[in-house]
Image 1 (cartoon, rainbow, N blue to C red):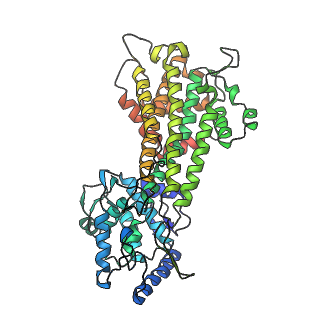
Image 2: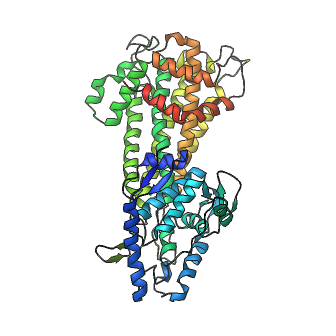
Image 3: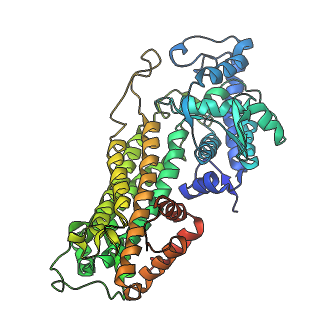
Length: 507
């Protein structure tokens, strides 16, 4: 595995995803260590001078005007983490927490937070040794960043809270550190605040959801190709000239994918051979998938900037000798695009479900009802379409934007909040539902081609058909469909499968 070096400036989404999901090792660059040392020196100097600086010598939020005595500053850091650890609900998955950890370390590595290198190195050591804090998924309003989730993360650094080691049972944070040879840190002035001011919970959700959506977008094109063959569709709609007169890049890419996948098929037809034109869910696939692809590009562009941003408060600028209390912790940039991510993923699922319906409906497909030769005795894939319909209906609820809501906190000091973490949680749920809907479309596409004769398929769609048949046998008689759907869904995002898929789609 490639070691991911944190500089604070050039972490990409793919690297963050690999650290979170594939346990890539992490290291801190010497440049980052030097930058952190410079901003920490400012904190030390201000403490010595007795200067009034928010979060360094004062309380937090509504208590920003309260000066903290010198002998209470370490206690303040502990109290901050304890009091802000107020999250509830099911814990985040391990990959989301690992994502939070690498993103927080990278933000601190920029050198504008006044934190010691040793504290950031402890976060990195925890990542590399498999210590994952247990963090409740609910409780962030995304205003001063993700205060509650990040406080639960930081508790483990001081030997409190709860953690898992290599996916084991939940144990006390101090015990988890000790089990891998690590010691808790004693936080000094400003460091508690530096650890919990930031957008890393919503950022981690965005990294996972957008990366999975990117891969599922490829699968959406492949699934559509099988459906177009199964429904004897008309590839003329994907002619290159079509995209030239409406030059959205996503549309052009999807048209190319469909042409590549369908090349050499004996099932597809010409205009007028069976019908003059296809229904929108086939004919407008490039326009719909392409719009989703372009929207996803915008999401990842914003996310790429955010995961390399300083989202602390106050920010320390050693070269300019400035300490500025501002609003970089506010989650609005991510809240908006994470809502967008849920919407675009829901649209991929919506059009997929319509293609599923066309395949199982004999009035629309010309195929046996519900893709079984023995209708009546057998129900075939009838309920697979029900499941897809249920998921896309659920997505419409989750796609309602969180970012349009705001509710004041901290005695109205924090009077506008982003709800970005709620947006991220919803986006991840919609993306997971999309994975199941596409799995059902692939299941139906393979079954339909069994009925038509797989030997008539295009070489590349036939390769996908064979991949599906390695996971799931043809449906000759009724059986529980849930295991079939789960097996395909589980395989869609496997690393080796993604590599194969990307090569398959290359023209």
